Amino acid sequence: MSESSDQSPLPTADRSPSMGQRLLKNQVFTIFLILLTMVAFLGIFTSTFLTATNIFNVLRAFSWIAIAAFGQSMVVIGGGIDLSCGSTMAFAGITAAMLMVVGVNVILSILISLGIGAFLGFLNGVMVSKTRLPPFIATMGMMSILRGFCYGLTNGWPVRDLPRSFLILGQRDLNILIWKVPLPALIMIFLAFISFIYLGKTKVGYHIYAVGGNEYAASLAGIDAHRVKYVIYTLSALFASVGGILMTSRLGVAAPTAAQGYELDIIAAAVIGGISLDGGEGNVWGALIGAAIMQILRNALVLMGFPAYWQPSAIGAVIIGAVMIDQYRKKRG
Image (cartoon, rainbow, N blue to C red; front, side):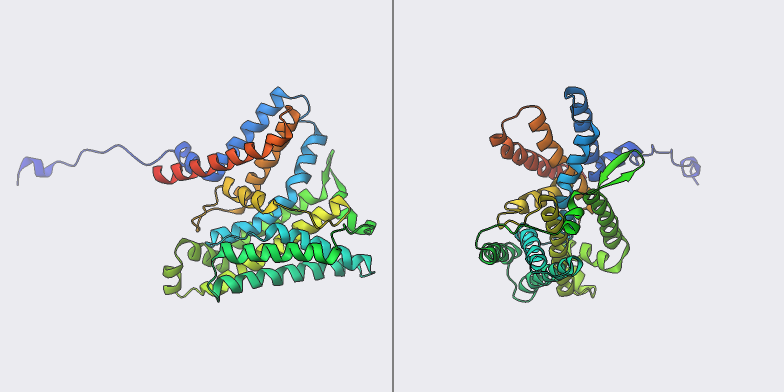
């Protein structure tokens, strides 16, 4: 036996990524760093951003967008998209408001509105799954139908004189330690935890990721893709309905024009939060941070005197940048 055969191979350098490298590859951690950078920048260069009043106003303002984005996240992770979420928010608010105005109990009105919203989402799932309509077409059609209902039911007029017990949902602050925290923000955090557990810790959540990653392979593995689509579109509409009710409660009126264009904000929150439009990747914490980034950006533009007419352009640039970063990260990974 030769001498070389008795020698042990030379040890090789450990090429496993460091903790810092793993964190930087984590999309949620990356966008959280962006959020912290924005907060630090605005805290230094503006005198009002870090005041408790402004922070809690920002929290309240994006809470219903974030809640709707939780449902949208499930749809996008599952390989679809829901363009009807903004109209669903308005329709849920109007339905609940009209029931309350005619004397129906507040809680019952909210439950009926949520039930109708969930059923409409189920119809989206049926159209996408059973009739094989592309999600873009099916939900865009539902978006137009619901917006038409909003105008038709109200004759174009907002529904007013809502009960005080309903307005508390969107306008009340709860005393926590030394702060008065908006109730919608607390509901948002609670629903974020529920959504995170549902997606990450349940069998149905696993199926959502599997179908979004590769529907054909998921079907071969025995996963019912039709059922998954029913679930994700139903939940998307349910979360949008919750957001719509909170929004209506905050505004004090149910207007047929409410939440117009919000579908773009909701989808953008998910995309900025690292939820891949290709499906099968992301989580609700990313959507929460994405919604926060968008609202903070809007708030920053106002505080820094940026013309309001140009704000959509700034938001659009952020969305494009977020998608480009996501694509770059995937290529590097």
